[in-house]
Length: 414
Ligand code: FAD
Ligand code: PYC
Image (tube, rainbow, N blue to C red; front, side):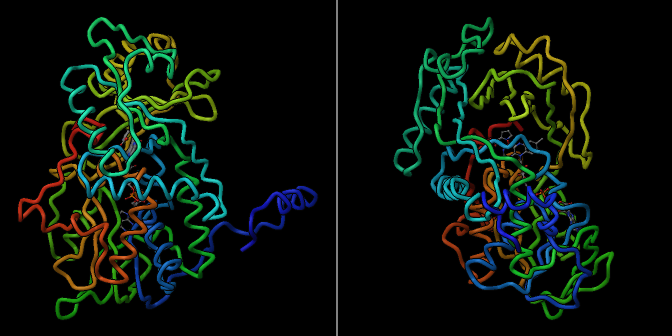
């Protein structure tokens, strides 16, 4: 595959950019693969990529029922941070954040990682205590975060009203190397690299059944025919329970819609990401100038990938208190994604009761930031049967009561 470079771009400029070729190949599915990954979101593609890169496993198919990156990976608000409380989470999210730092070079694809800094506002004394505790935990875990006072918050984000009538800003949990990345580019970059290693990415190919023989996976049935495989990775976010049921086991997950919206583009006014969990909303400014705004999950289990009016009203009403200048902004687009939420708000990266079947799910409202680390660890688990990064995230933890409680770090109330 042709590599991107300043020289290549200059050369293509002289020939109408006709020499680039497809970003990922379009092929019919084969009959058999060493590994089949279900779900061409960021986590599925990253898993395939690190299987090839780190373990030389390239006879891999990634099956996607819709279009590549069209699930939550292409619907999220792109916040990247690793300021989690528990040690296993900090290790996994920090691995991901550190891989983001060099992902563009690694994939030879500009994922537009922007470590502009993330502030999680403390607007109650409870949050002050919680975030100070996280800063201490992060110091022990080797994750660089800082507790900052209200004046520093104001310096970092001058458009904020820190003296709000209901919830004045009491300080914040600041991660200077947190930030954002272009979500589509993350999916496209991994897809391009997977194609380059000879893997097949099959879109419009829904997995409708999982075939087993003697307790071991034999293959999958799809809308494009049967495909055999030695190992199967189920990486389908909000549809994980549906797929698990087809494989004959249950997952401790609830699927709900999470919504977001963007405003009309305006001049640059905010160069950090702000999350305000008490009033409940988060906001950053995209490179196009749109204010990217996110709210909470729907209060009922559903599979509806769309927005609803009361979320616009609730989220903007909350954010206007802290950012009065957005009161006259017009909102342009709104959407939803189906997120898969576990009881302890931590993901599941796990073997399953069916030999050869692995699951990567439960990222809930916060898995975009984890994509590179999750793929790295999941590939290790699938290739070697064990990964230190996934060891605590097995699905058996719910039966054994070994929860990894991240309800405060999760960022979105649910
Ligand atoms: P997905 O990207 O959803 O990919 C799963 C794929 O599986 C889909 O493309 C789907 O079509 C496919 N699939 C499903 N069933 C089948 C089947 N039977 N056969 C074949 N394919 C199938 N996280 C953050 O870290 N920061 C944020 O700021 C953030 N904001 C968010 C805002 C919103 C509005 C939403 C919805 C989510 C947000 N998240 C955020 C969460 C994050 O988007 C997800 O955790 C992450 O993208 C999950 O990636 P994935 O690859 O597991 O899932
Ligand atoms: O996990 O940081 C996060 C997040 C922000 C918005 C949605 N999820």
